Amino acid sequence: MSIGGGIFLLVIGAILAFALNFQVAGVDIHLIGYILMAAGAFGVILGIVLATRRRRVVSTSRTGVDSVSGERVTRRSTEDDGPLV
Image (cartoon, rainbow, N blue to C red; front, side, top):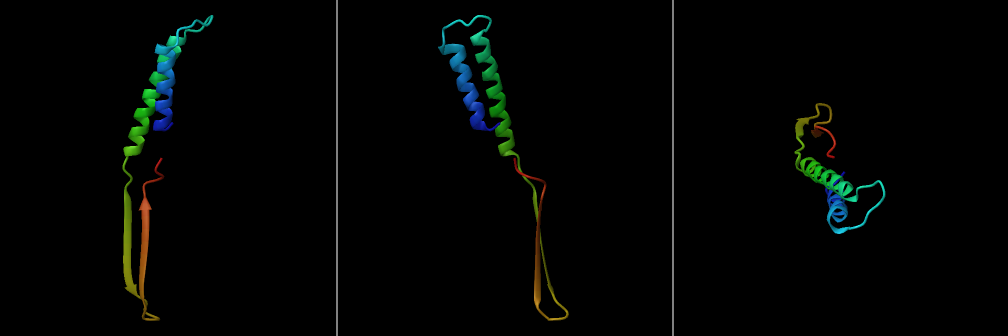
């Protein structure tokens, strides 16, 4: 869930909890609104934590001379700790 999805759940939950005033048999609309707001708050916090997580990248550069052709050879490699979610 992204930050936008969490904000969407917060808004829908707040509308159900505070703005609507009707009854549905066997369903508590206000409780559903509070549950959606809690899920939205959790989604926003999780989205912020994942967005601010730092990714470690290691870059290596090696330069040498090819003994056969006499040309300068540069090799670069990059490694990271995994995909950025």
